[in-house]
Length: 236
Image 1 (cartoon, rainbow, N blue to C red):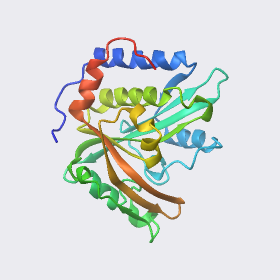
Image 2: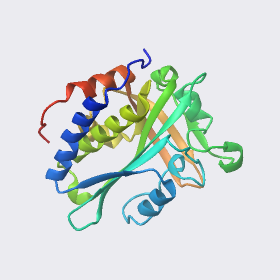
Image 3: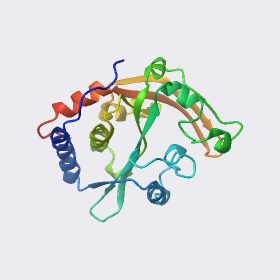
Image 4: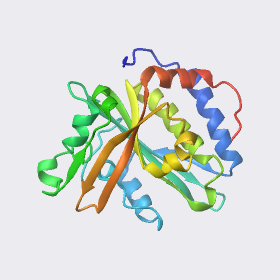
């Protein structure tokens, strides 16, 4: 896999983001982003149908340096939260995403302090060992039930991709997705170019997390091409 070398074109990114921000507005959703993850945890904790925010986006378990993470929120016409999602940048120079997961450093700043003795993560997806360098990780997706089935995941994914590209121009963009997202077509809405089974067989005891997720990813060049190709209105 080739790593990202292209300089970001801010004007093209702004055009790309405008398309999807307008698409969200047509759904009567106002999007905004934030950088304070204490605030993010406070917001997500108040969402009754959302599971606990994963520790890699919680400052008490994995602090995120300024400029290396952000979150997105969508508010409906009644100022109620309709969607959330978060992103962070991992510096995986000299290592790879599989090692990052299996060491539990993807979830905890210091696993020796924060991990339970029985915490485990196994990554068997072959491509995870090739994902290295500057890696943008997208996760903690939640969409309120009444907005599902309307193409909103496509909007959410695109906005985060545009922002991550503008901020970091990463070598790779990746995430972990439950099998049901593939089975129900949600993964297709997200437009991930690649997916493999065995992304993370994860057990975090104190977090009450037991997952068996797919690895999903784009290369940096694929991300750039995606942003460059969007110049006009889309159909959601």
